[in-house]
Length: 393
Ligand SMILES: Cc1cc2nc3c(=O)[nH]c(=O)nc-3n(C[C@H](O)[C@H](O)[C@H](O)COP(=O)(O)OP(=O)(O)OC[C@H]3O[C@@H](n4cnc5c(N)ncnc54)[C@H](O)[C@@H]3O)c2cc1C
Image (cartoon, rainbow, N blue to C red; front, top):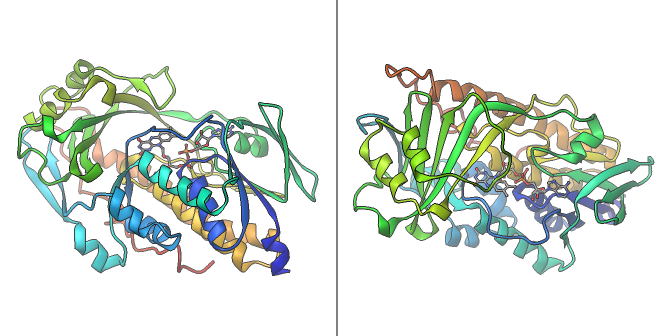
């Protein structure tokens, strides 16, 4: 029976961080996968992502430990600052403390670097594993096989299909019908700023969150400390554009942060125009089911979440490992999907809801008399004390 499981054709839709982690984890356990991605090539998109110890365990287990050390930054300290005075109100030990406490390090990485490393590891094992230029449209499960159709006319048949196609998942629509993600009332500005262009001494501590009325500003270092990545989350009543690459202007972001302490405004002012983008934050309600027949969801397709706990990518990475472990442990496909969902659904739903709740403590009102709530983080909530390579499945 186990041999039959290992011989299955597994089709994954979507080569994001979650889909690629799942693919590499499945390969590690001896499965053959094909990942179908709509993009014509894997390129330099996105900016900073947090890889907290709960996700690092997975990347270590699939052979990326050395890569993370090379591409990731391990901040020694984190902190929370007051929006107007810049006073450090909370200090957070990171660095070796995290390794000692959780057995895995805390990294901040450029999404493109992690994405590239995952793709490289998958292709080194199987050069045909990632199929680009395939935009999934529909599927049909005949009870024995799943038939997938793509916009380019291609048709593929597999034993199981996993939808890892992100927030606007078409696999999710194929399973549960169309339901548009809701605009949450937050937009994100993201900037990448060369450290060499900044006055010395303003990037202390190296990883820092500042919260203020109706907005927050998080910044940390990437790429060997040569770049500052910042994300400014701002409350907004309306939003029309969609995408990951909508340009924003320095003046627009400075206007959002009027009255903030000077270091924040200095960082914004030094952002090169090509390094400044914005996107809207959308949300969905938790799903009651993640599987129908031979099809299941993974990553943002199953549980998109607000970024206030920095766990969006980490939850997708955790999913990938638990999916692979469930397949390795099970004697049948039904059992594998059931084990996967049981291991993942309640945890990710809880983190999704906690991310929403945390938004309210970050941005408790737009008035000038804003008082930050008690600092809540993935660590204070115990989210990092979870090892996806070791939990029961
Ligand atoms: C281009 C891009 C840039 C991002 N940048 C950041 C960032 O800077 N900071 C941050 O915190 N988060 C960013 N994210 C989001 C973050 O990566 C995810 O929230 C998290 O990693 C979960 O990943 P995922 O793989 O589930 O979903 P995603 O990262 O959204 O990946 C989904 C993948 O599926 C593909 N896909 C979608 N529809 C189809 C289809 N019909 N057929 C085939 N393939 C399809 C997409 O092209 C994408 O490669 C970005 C996501 C994307 C897609």
